Image (cartoon, rainbow, N blue to C red; front, top):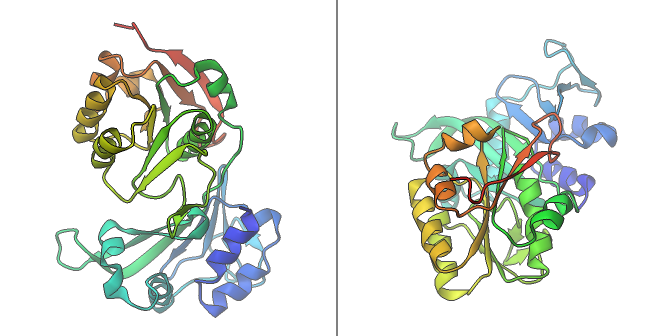
Length: 305
């Protein structure tokens, strides 16, 4: 998977005016982590340490007030959503309920707008789109794997710190040696398309896509006999209960959580009981959004209580 391929996929969804400008962007500047479209505002390219704005001649500027910036209309955003829905918005009710689409190469498109019934069920009157570009960074988790092997680990970091990227590579490394079940609720890790994992997550890895984490964990333990289970963004008490149940069956876990340090980690109500129960042997803390995927600390947790 290359940045160019992902960029070309995004180009296939945007309107002609926007596509013309995006095609002029040079190859190095195409390596954004996100490309955002907001109604009546400039198209923005988001990088780990900066944000740039697209101009009509394909240049990127720091000035969002530049008169040459490409601004998308509500109608253009609507046209992009219709393409995402394959011109059948009704058939994509689930995606619109959840507020995102998953495309080839693991591109995740977040959708914002007005919820039609006021209860947060289905988004309509679309106001912005965020094309988030997934990237595999092979061997970014080697340091973790060489130190902890198949032991259980919780990967911690803030927004855009590279938690999913590190999890994906560790899943690949472990999944080449052990039976792994990957619970990929939002399809951000495996980028499965038509049943095939487009990202390398290991030859011995079974992938469960689209199910709630706790449902996938229970199902995997019952039917797939994993040595290890991988999942992203543990946040609910149902997840914790399922993990404790699987841990009691001898399954090791690797998961991620939004926590920038140990103190934040222990404030997460879904995580603290798992640490106190000895589920996780180690915690890995990442540097942050300025250095996505970079490891700051590997901390031993077992027997901490």
